[in-house]
Amino acid sequence: MKKLFLLALAAILSISTFAQEPIDESTSESKFPYGKLLKMSPQELFDAKFKFDDYKNQYVLRKVNGWKIALTATAGTNPMPSVNDYQVIIQEGATGVAFIEVTFYDTKIYHDILTFAKDNGQDFLETNSSAVKKAQFNYDNYSFSLTCQTFSQSATAKSGRSSANTVDQSFDTYTFTIYTGIDPVSDFLAKQEQKAKKRDERGGKKRSAADLM
Image 1 (spheres, rainbow, N blue to C red):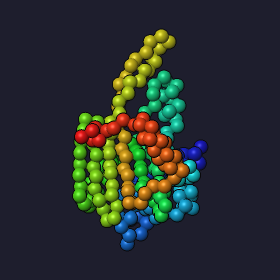
Image 2 (image 1 turned 45 degrees about the vertical axis):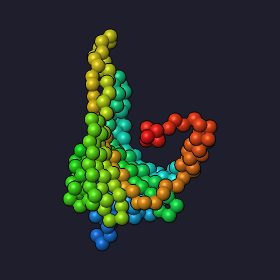
Image 3 (image 1 turned 120 degrees about the vertical axis):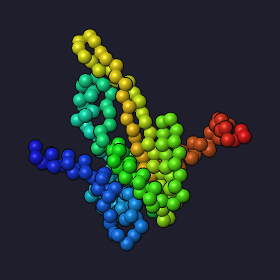
């Protein structure tokens, strides 16, 4: 039991570790959130429990609160993400990392990154809509995007053998993306491009509002 607790604690702490722990103070990558991931070797990523998706040419690390999903499924409600859940995608390109996308639910990490953007980012731009907040900025030779999107769902919770209550739930999903300027490359993307090309040749794709202008 103690060993399982320690493993769970390590998993919970790992996303904040990636965000805050520098690798080399002399490099620009050590100065912005998750920059250390750009310099990690394949072996270091595997040691950090990343899985490599050969088809998409990505390193992926996910953490999901399985206990909470099991409990909500038993209770008849839809699972809500835990504050400690996250996903990290490192998309490779022809000459290096193309982008890193981190999806998480911890409000503190979101505000820490937003503070860094406002204090240190160049060309900072913030846009808001009813459900999505987005911040964009540059730092050194990198471009960044930080979004906060609110999702709502209705869950049915059983309160007895024949009665049920409908509960409205909402949660925020945060996504932080680092763009290196390198084009992403993968078999998956090549296949998607081929599909889009064939669709365009058949005239099956409707023009966008911008195209109609």
